[in-house]
Image (cartoon, rainbow, N blue to C red; front, side, top):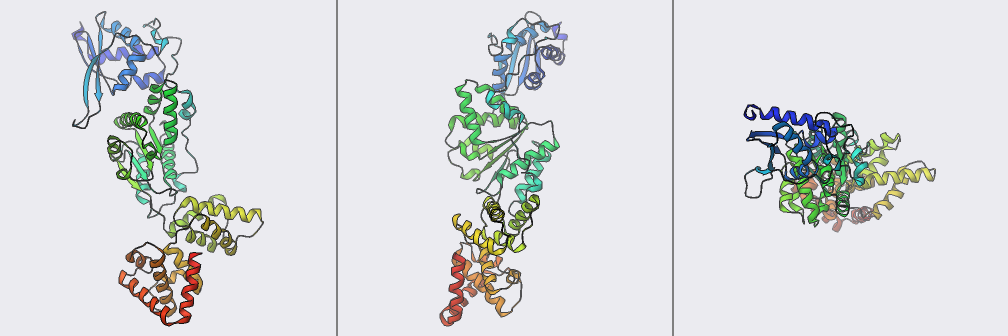
Amino acid sequence: MLKEKNVDEVWENCLRIIKDNINYQSYKTWFVPIKPLKLHDHVLTIQVPSQFFYEWLEEHYISLLKKTIKKELGHDGRLEYSIIMDNSENEPGPFAIHVPTTERKATANPSISMPIDLNRSTSKEIPNPFIIPGLKKIKVNSQLIESYSFDNFIEGDCNRLARSAGFAVAEKPGKTAFNPLLIYSQTGLGKTHLSHSIGLQVKNNFPEKTVLYVTTDQFINQFIDSVKNNNQNDFIHFYQIIDVLIIDDIHNLAGKEKTQDVFFHIFNHLHQKSNQIILTSDKPPVEMKGLEPRLLSRFKWGLSADLQIPDLETRIAILYKKLYNDGIDVPKEVVEYLAYSINTNIRELEGALISLLAQSSLNKKVITLDLAKQMIDKFVKNTSREISIDYIQKVVCDYFNIPIEMIHSKTRKREIVQARQLSMFFSKKHTKASLASIGLHCGNKDHATVLHACRTVNNLVETDKQFRQFVEELDKRIKL
């Protein structure tokens, strides 16, 4: 009789019984992914996606499985697992091992070990075993900040690759080559904003998907709590059912060996299921220290995209976007002054704008360039501003009262040429930029033109007293 039974039909009959005796979420999580492989000599072999999956079934559902198999296959019916194992360093790919079911009884789910009427649905639903008290709120709350959307993320040359990749991921989470997507940059350049944007877009496109944003420090603390409470399995399972997992500052896992090991298995499980993983870091994988090589190698599977320091136009656009969202009007020269003065960190740039607005509101003063200079200069000093080529050009043009656009033009008027040469001279003196980079920022000139400009300024300083005073005064203003 058994030989006439089809393995798929047998398993479908088993699933109908199982579905009647557990809640839907448990059924969907633990039984839908199982694949029936073969039926031979009263032994049903099923394939499970991981070792952890097998252990969870044996610990929580073994009584239900045995009773179901025996009802379907008779008293001699038995169950065998085919477990998909992750490849080791020397294996070419995933492989499977076959393990018979144990003689244990379910200990972690008392409601299953009770007598079950296999011919009808149970009236008492088994409680969901994976909601950890410390994570219950996170399970229903993605922890995403609504204002960190793609609409509020200003695109520029500095972030175009990362933003484009992030948007592609949001349109097809887990279905692109960008899995994992690792976004890295210095602090304050928009990693967190972009990662939230992806999560928000996924929720908008796929409301049924579970999206979770969590910092690495939160992840570490939750794991420590799970160890203390002896519910590590609950912790692992919680993260393994997330559709889109966003972990901020993954470099903070450095030195945390046990947490790295747990994350390694969570990562593998999510990746095998084609669930999307998004990570942020302050450095690329090749520069990360204190992380296991097997973990770093997985970070390199997808795409690593960096966010660079925004150029002047992008900084101005960021300020205008924030002002527009807040419904505030600020003079153009003030916005430009802020963008020129703070050039290495978007967070500091927005902080300076907020400080200026607060100063104006509290003291009931109109926002003017003079007020901005008084307040922002102090702010910039306190944040150890790094002198940039853009800032030098601004100071030089203000000193000679000429539009900054003229520095980038091809005009050969004497006063413009002089201002351009001074900008090159001070850029070489006060920045670490190469001659080619300086020339590019000063009218798209080559490095030979920059060298000629520096020699010309040095010669005039030695021979022209008035010009030397210009240079000394400008140098003081630049270093203020």
